Every structure is written in structure tokens, then in C-alpha cells.
Amino acid sequence: MTTRQVSLDQVKSMVEKLCVRANTVMREDVRNALQKSLSEEEKDSVSSRMTDILIENAVLAEEGVMPLCQDTGIVNVFLEIGEKVLFEGEGLNDAVNEGVKKAYEDNFFRKSIVDDPLLRNNTGTNTPAVIHTDIVRGDAFKICIMPKGFGSENKGRIRMMNPTCTKEDIIAFCVDAVKDAGADACPPYIVGIGLGGTLETSAYMAKKTLLGSLDEENPKPHLAELEKKIKTKCNQLGIGVMGLGGKTTVLRVKVMEGATHIAGCPVAVNISCHALRSACGEL
Image 1 (cartoon, one colour):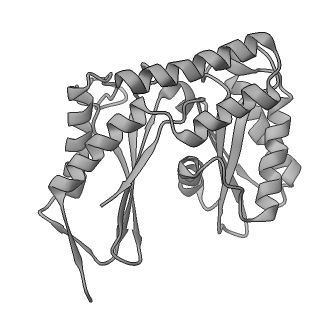
Image 2 (image 1 turned 60 degrees about the horizontal axis):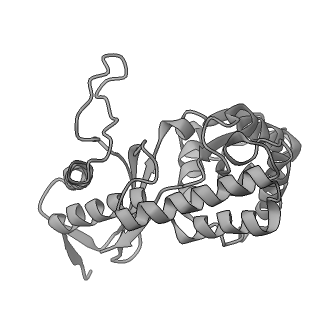
Image 3 (image 1 turned 180 degrees about the vertical axis):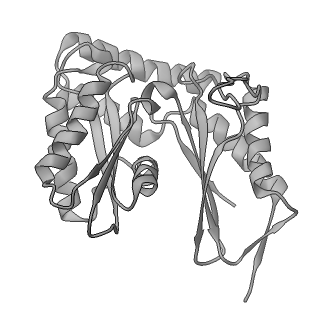
């Protein structure tokens, strides 16, 4: 089998660059969604003005290489490693964490990670990152970075539903999660939903689906319909931009599904603020 070698120094450098980009440059699809809500959906003058400010903030952050948000989050790293990839050196996770550390130290991003949830000692480096690894076919190596602030992460929800649950039950649970979030996580939101799998994989899918483009429709018609129904009901809540009221509480709902057990139907909701910070690259 032909293999391809990847240097861990390259990994460290790529992670560093992606951390900076994710924290300072708003994704084009996210900015487009905000702009669309301003021109087509959100007519309320207060909400329109606030949306203008969010877009302006994104422009200033990119120009000045400054954080889109003061909470530069816990760094979620998604690695897709081709089965033909070999790494030069040892310690892939160490290389990832070194890249995160360098990005946060050199750019003076806020460091928010504590080493123990009870003792609460700050590590001072914003590491360790949360690293997810997926082995795929071929020789590609892809890295995606998602810094997740806890204003939004705290609003996540999981429910282990019965297999007899209806689509209406699922919709109601997801809409209630957005309602409970209220204005606390800086709407308008992008809502990721993991449907199926197990307790932990439903939460993983709910977060990973947020990496996908907001411009692409779900290829599965029944899921695309579910996304639209949840979005419609969420926008009827009237929470609006930054909680100031209006028609735009949610910019997009994205659903990822997976096989599950005959006796259950796990449903996870992961809420992102309007900025949805992420960046991807390949080596």
C-alpha cells in the first residue's frame, strides 16, 4: 500500500493558523446568512441595526486580526486521517495541543480551560483541546477547528427519546432548547442536531454538523423538511437578534443522523451563537 508522510510540525503549524482564522474571520456562509436575514427576513428596525453591528464587528475583527468574541472558547478539533497517512514523529495529540497553545499565547486570546472541573485551576494555555479523530479511506489529512464559547455550549441539550417518539416530539424538544437558551447565547443561532446513534455520538453529530456549509441543503429530503420545520417554529418564538425581538432567532438548523438501537432515539441539540467560529484545512 502506498503511503504518504505528514510532519507533526506541519500539523502544529496548521492548527495554529486555523485557530487564528476561526477566532478572527467569520465564515463566508455565516456572514451571507446574516446579510440575508437583514435584507429578506428581518424588517424590525432595532433588529436590523443590531444585525448591521454584528456584521460590522466581523469586518473589524478580520481587519485587525482580533477575536470575533471575547470568549475564545474551548478548542474542538476534528481530524480526518486517511488510512494511508503516516506521521513523521510521535505524539499527534501533543502536536495539536502545541498548535493551540501557540495560537492563543501569540495572539493574546483569552485562555479559559481549567484542568479539573472541581479544583478549577486554569492551565494558562487554553489546552488541552477536545480532539475527535476519524479514520477515512485514502491519503488525505483534514483538520477542522471549532472554538466553542460556553455561552452557547451551556445551552446544549440531550434527550434519550423512546423509539415511538414522533417527528413532532423531536421538533418540540429542539424548539424548547432554543426557547430555554433565550438571549443568553447571542442569537441569531445556528442549531446543530444529532439524531440517532448513542448518548455520546448524538452529541458529537450535533456539533460536527455545524462544520458544514449553511448554503447546502440536506441531501436527505426528510431531514431537510425537519430542519425547515424546526427553524420556522424557532423563529416564531420572537427572541430575535441578540434577544431584542423580531423574526430572526435562528439562521439555520442542520441535522445529522446515524444508525441507532431499536429501543431508542437519542436527540442532541448543540447551539452556536451567530458567529459560528470554525476553520478547516488539509495537509
